[in-house]
Length: 222
Image (tube, rainbow, N blue to C red):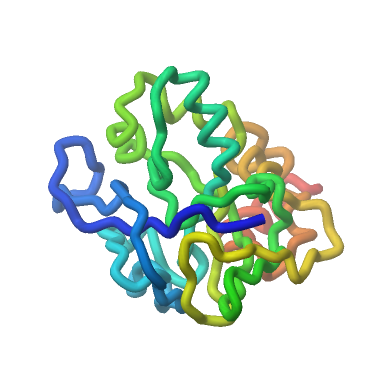
């Protein structure tokens, strides 16, 4: 398991973003050399966990529980075959493009050591938005991405450090539940009756989703 690339974006004005100020940092490109990764601060205040990476709509993106976004190269390859086009590392706006790691099959609360220092913890899957669809330029992209059910993973930074392309990725902790990123994604998008199952992940789950799961259980039961 290894890191193929570290991808950073800069704020760009585009016609398709749902950001009221008209800019997005979704177009992320691989960079050479080390990049510092650290907890950026609470959502709404903190942006990306990677130094030099732009997050332009802080109310929905960035912050400690969405500090880093990872996508498996294997999933990008599957989409390449379906779309009939090349998808470079970073094409989905991911910060980390990995090889040999089942990112969407990772458990909520699973921890990865990336390189010699940094430790990251899986919190949730990425929910597609209009900006993502505009960036991809594919008709019905949000629906297609959702139906595929392999959203990649958001991670929080447990131990800061420098990371770079080529670094090894090691799973250093697996929690004792069965709540994967893929299950969490399905529960919040297409099959809300699964929401109570997310509670098994406890506080490792993104706090917004933990609150949603608790509210659902209180209203409808398990």
